[in-house]
Length: 293
Image 1: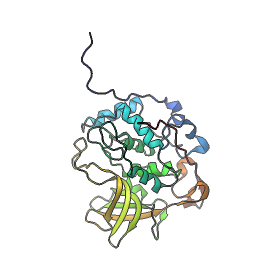
Image 2: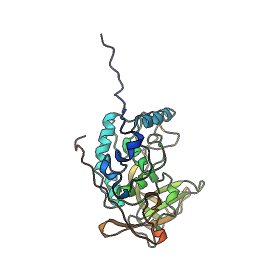
Image 3: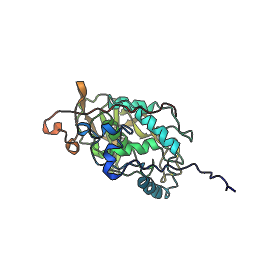
Image 4: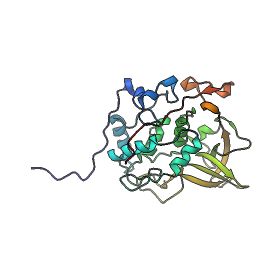
């Protein structure tokens, strides 16, 4: 005799690697491409937590229960890997435009480029692999995590941070700014927080940007109060608003053959232009994964 079927789909319980083999098993920004983790030091040769191991999933689930968010389903994590692996890696602006134009949806019918109402969006969780922050599903503010992942995807050393203000002194001052430069906004009432995105253009009073954790498609019941259903896309914000002001616009350079001038390289052994150097950064290749979701 069999019992009633479980109405809840099976949760992901994937143990990808032991701590000793983690660096060669999972690569943030490149889906799971073992050979890329340590090649030439690799842009991903920094300590990170794989958020899809059993321990990480269980720990995240305990915190998310405080909000009521449910952990991602197996089928959605698998589909998210396809989305991640298909991202371009030629320039950060290309990466962000790819995610902004996504139409792929998960099992809930919600797009992979926005917060989900009930379950964590595994694509957003994936971005935190490029930071030192453990996310509470997709409730944790994720604009800087998305930027950090985007930079690493293109072989550019990021700040490995989920804090927007970490990018206020990144690279060099952009004067004049150009599309693809980094715009850092600072909250008027809380200068330790704000927003970060890529520059698209400006008018006398507004700056046009593209980034993550933007927009407001209504409240999200599974996250803390006042958190909106945000997404990846374009937006226009005042340069000097009542809530936020533009703190900095920073620039990095991509040269021929994958040369990059920007950012801190100390964590991966790469030279930094702050010390007068140029470094050839390893550029990852997309991993081959099934195209059907």
